[in-house]
Each structure stands twice: as structure tokens, then as C-alpha cells.
Amino acid sequence: NAGVTQTPKFQVLKTGQSMTLQCAQDMNHNSMYWYRQDPGMGLRLIYYSASEGTTDKGEVPNGYNVSRLNKREFSLRLESAAPSQTSVYFCARGDSGANVLTFGAGSRLTVL
Amino acid sequence: QKEVEQNSGPLSVPEGAIASLNCTYSDRGSQSFFWYRQYSGKSPELIMFIYSNGDKEDGRFTAQLNKASQYVSLLIRDSQPSDSATYLCAVTNSGGSNYKLTFGKGTLLTVNP
Image (cartoon, rainbow over all chains, first blue to last red; front, side, top):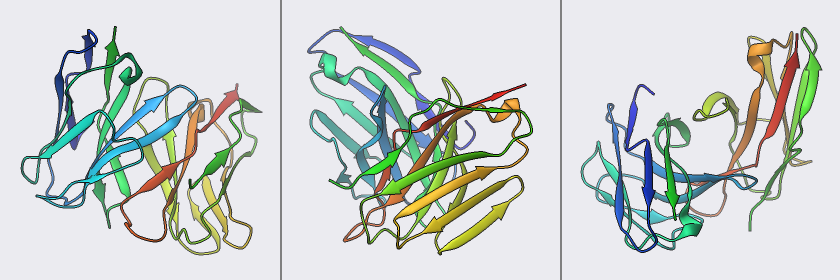
């Protein structure tokens, strides 16, 4: 997906392991987001960053931490993965006033 | 908890027909409304957004908003098999950050050739 790059695309973890999902945008937009998508649950906001240096909790922040390293990069960290964190994770940037979202291709995470 | 409700479908229409997708929302103060399309295994992509009551047209797509009824819809005219996807309705939350969107769970649309 041109504009927002996520890595890795796939990851399998064991319960208790940690990992970081990386996200980078190729534009200079202020706002960036992390969502998770689960079957039957839709997209749920984990954390967002309105601008460089700021982060805020979304609907489901427990078990996650984020870092807005600079204007381009916004990472999501799982300190101690749990099976309930098995999901597809999408990073997005906000265009045209923050809530017109351009999504990355997604990262599929499985926690065993 | 602010909610956005969509019929999960599947909604099945023949090629060339009009597909009508509906969404209701609970937050009366919501100001901005979005429709995203998501193909299976892919990420969501914006189709269109609407801010004001009434209709907004973009090619084969028309978004309709009725804030009094807390209802937003998406019409797809001359439906094509390539329109087969899940359609997500999203609404901004009032009372604070304009950055938070609440998404519905999506409606699966199938267009039959």
C-alpha cells in the first residue's frame, strides 16, 4: 500500500514473548493510528498519535505500547503477548484533517 | 460506548442492480461519516465521506446522511462483480478528540454476474 508501510506482514509468537510492529508513512502527515481487526468485531482503535511527540489511547489499549519516533514512524509494541492479541493489525495515517485514513497492508499476528 | 451498527449481510445483488448499504450510529454529536471498502485479505480503502445532511455523489456511489435519524447509507449504482467486498461505515466521535473513528463491523456485498 503506497504511502504506509508495515512490517512484518506475518508473525507467530509464543505467549509471553514481546515484539514490535513497525509503521512508516511516506508523507508528512501529522496523525497516525494503530487498529486491530478481528472476525465479527470490526476495526478497533488501539492507539493514535495526533502529532509527533504525542500519543493517546484508543478503544482497546491494554497490553500495548506505542512510540511516535518521528513524524514518519509510529510503532506498536506488545510487551508480553497473549493469545487474545491474535489479530490483524493495521497502521494508518490521517489525511485531509486527520480522519480520512490511508491504511497499510496489515500485519497478521498469531500468538500461541 | 458509542456504537455504529451495520447489517453484516451478506447482501447479494445481480450485476447492474443498485446495492443499498445502511448504517446507524448512536452518537448524536457525530459530525463526519465515512465509507470504506475492504476486499478479502486486504486493507480498507476510502470510498467517500459526507459531512452534511443530504446526498453526495461520486461516480457510481452516492452517500446519504440523515443526522436527525442518525442514519447514513451508501448506494452503488450499476453494481459490478468488482464491487464485491465488505463495506465499512465509520463515524467520528463527539465530545473530544476528532481523531477517533468508530467503525461498524461491515456489510459483505456480493455482486453476482
